[in-house]
Length: 548
Image 1 (cartoon, rainbow, N blue to C red):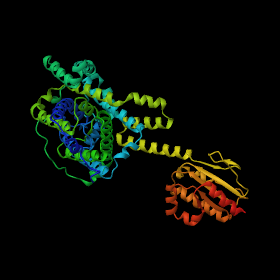
Image 2: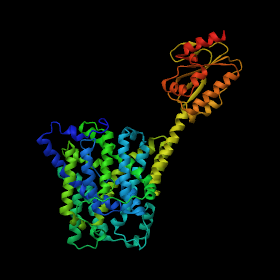
Image 3: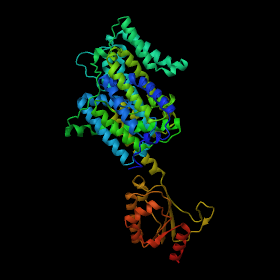
Image 4: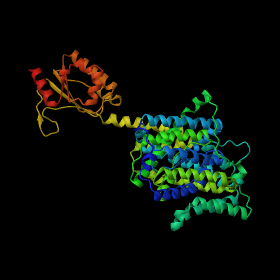
């Protein structure tokens, strides 16, 4: 367990100095200022009250920093969860969200304990790029209503992305020009402020946009919805609460909980990899997964939503001097202080400003350049996986998109591997690759198999034929890295054919994995261990002696 779970805080405190403490305090303060408007905006985008985003950043942010496998990773609510959380809340309520978040936390802990941290890398970039771009589009569509100040007709059911898009079209006549003005000013600040040298980098653009938006609406008494008009905000401390577990609900929430766990694992470990490159460190992926699991469980129990490592906030932490988990813990403590003292003033924030912030979040996470580049340069099957995952994320939901995307990726991969397996018969005087010509006497046939032997390539073995005058058949398996049960069954069929026609079967250079599989399947004992040769030269010598 020591190698699986070892929080980075333990190593970070060795030789920890006062100067580093000051740097971590400053970094934590700046990251908290950045996280404040984002946490509120992401909570609203997720269909929950604004303070729940703050709860998540406080509870999960502190716990994951304390227990995590990265020195500088900052965790909290992220845009990746917005659509799936909104769907859970719409269908199962807040209690369902709490259960799903806790279930996802348990799954993340199991992933870490079972050392599955390294397996996250096997998810193709076409799937992660596809659903990330899809999430960005769903977030952007969901913010059009508040950005334009639209009023949906009473009884409008707009939970899914397509429903929201339809409702926007139907209610476009309720457009509020003041809302568009405030949102446009906020969007301009978010785009231009970071370009203003040092001050643009030190002071978060989202904070400036929030302050300017509040001042404009208050000073000019504009008819624009604010957070307080739509939500009742609680400025109290997060309260511990156990949900009522219903087995039926747990079963229905399993796919969503697994998707949350998968997203949390992918995004947190990706954030760790990015930050490793920035500070020259190496994270512990399994420790990070366990910490993410504990953090999500605690977030659910204290009224928060799912959390994971946030790449933008982590990068800000590093750029402002954060070099230990202390900065992440300080970020959570500062947010707790803001929650208690300033949270009532969050009610003044105009909704178009929140929409503008989320537009920028959606743009930054869309990775549209990567999306376009993949469409132009990737093989056709990868483009299909990318586009299908993207479309399903927008039209249906993330669970369906990831499931279908993974199935397509696996099917295409198996097809490529199956197509790559070749079976060829050596001609007389075959060059075996080292410049020597092999003399193959009459009555001997050498069949070389190149590539993995598994069910996707089984049709190539089904049509295998041997000339009538052959007395010894050599199967050269030098380039067969793996074999599965279907291929083993095919080899048994070849062996039975050889026995029926009184042909001696010899296998040459069987690699380690195929040899283990064939031994367990009792194929080695059926053919005879003496008929397994280390190389083609030995196999040919045996075959010649048998023919003579």
